[in-house]
Amino acid sequence: MLIALAAISLLAVVVLPQLWVRRTFDKHALDRADIPGTGGELARHLLDRFSLQHVAVELTERGDHYDPVGKAVRLSDKNLSGRSLTAVAVAAHEVSHALQDARSERLLAVWQQLARLAATTDRAAGLFFVAAPVLALIARTPAAMIALVLIGIALLSVRVVVTLVTLPVEFDASFSKALPILQHGAYVSAADLPAVRSVLRAAAFTYLAAALISLVNLARWVRLLR
Image (cartoon, rainbow, N blue to C red; front, top):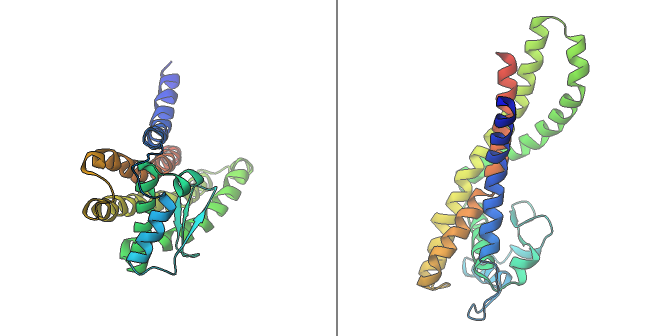
């Protein structure tokens, strides 16, 4: 019973943030006639306004994001062509990442370096976890088992650090940049600001579930070491 409750609690901790983010996006995703342009048009306007003409605005099926390598703000179809508060807020959020990149902001640079490292360690972790059962049979001494667990912890720790660094980068994009841009530029009405804040908060928390999963996996390996 206790194991079942723990499993349910763990599932709730991981899944609920994802559900909340999706619900928030969907709640404000209805097109409105009083919104003068699409999310894609707003993104292009803001990029031009901040002298980022070299950054493209493109359609994506992989989720809204800014690509610092390809120099492109990529928006899902709903947010690229939609005239909703979600489209406006998400477009401003992703443009804010382009601003972080253009200004060579340190936290984003650290995140980019860690993300590149994590891409390598993720591949290594995939191979390691496939081979772990076989290695466990070979490693019959306590020292060898401890070494295996430490390798697992080291590989997962990189991803945990990346996801934790991602959160302040996302909050800066939402609340230090996107919200003031939308508010002071009068791109949304005062009555719509609470909804826009909710969407921007959800955009910042998009990576929270990934951070929680990484922490859960890391905790499992730490428990083995104990």
